[in-house]
Image (cartoon, rainbow, N blue to C red):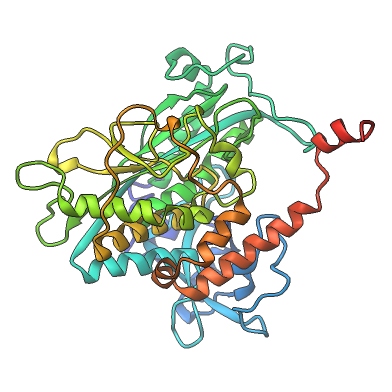
Length: 455
């Protein structure tokens, strides 16, 4: 590996040659966050970039998580036109798990007239960041991502089981923050760290979470687009590292019936672009009015934003009381039962931790929508509720209970739809409703267990 194997490149020809790359994976994140795209010989990739000849159909953005298309789209062109893939060459990286020297690059997409595709999740995040830029502001985020390691499961009718680590014993229960429990999975974790280093994925600490064989990785803070790119790559990396170690890694929000779910907490703060000062703190180090307005926006639009934070039918199984998951719209200082937590920090690091998004969320959309809600709070100067002390679980459940309910809330949230782009929101709702239609046709094991002979 050359020294610049994961650095932004000015001369992609030299980089591909220097790293002896044979193939290039062109990745486009879809509505779910799944990397779609094409795999090309390096020579054809270079030609495609030079001639702007890399193409992919617009239908990519009406694919459901099952791989099927939204059957009756109203927002795409009827001829299913081709889009131009525009590789972001700063994202060119080696793919470390392939035997054949391979690189990957994340692509934006444009129409033939050069306009960006407004229903592409990466473009939605760029759109929100532009709104901040217009106001002289710069968001900073730091995701925390939880996931489970499980035994390989090839029959979806059987429940998942925790993976077995070096000890050879299955965890009977979670060992929150257990060092030895985390070390039990050293082999896969070492591969994850190695693969992340090669790809320039800037992860920080790892810890064992509350579920059996459940781990959490923290990312260092930085630019929202770069962090969304890293999270997408990280998910793929963890899955590959697990498979190479004979197990699976899952980012399902709730993979086990009686265990905590997996979240993607997003720490966020806003800087003044000129001075670099954190606008969430006053000169005396106290929370500013804009900090409170930002929280007010997150609160007011939280229910409408839920399809992006909890995008799957399984997501809502995670959001139950006393399970390390939020159920209300409250906020509090250093209160982990609150969906919006303000950690104790010095003025430079004053931030809000959004604890609602699940690990199954599309990182581009979870970050974009969280920032959009906060920006609406700044624009509308929304006052938040008083901070909660003590457990938020003593309050009634205030978040949507199902994906159907959250999609209904989103469809009526005009300010949020306008901020994200109404055409994008229409496409997203269509994809999610198509997934719901597919899910409703499935007969579950619970139904077979309790109804086959009892009703």
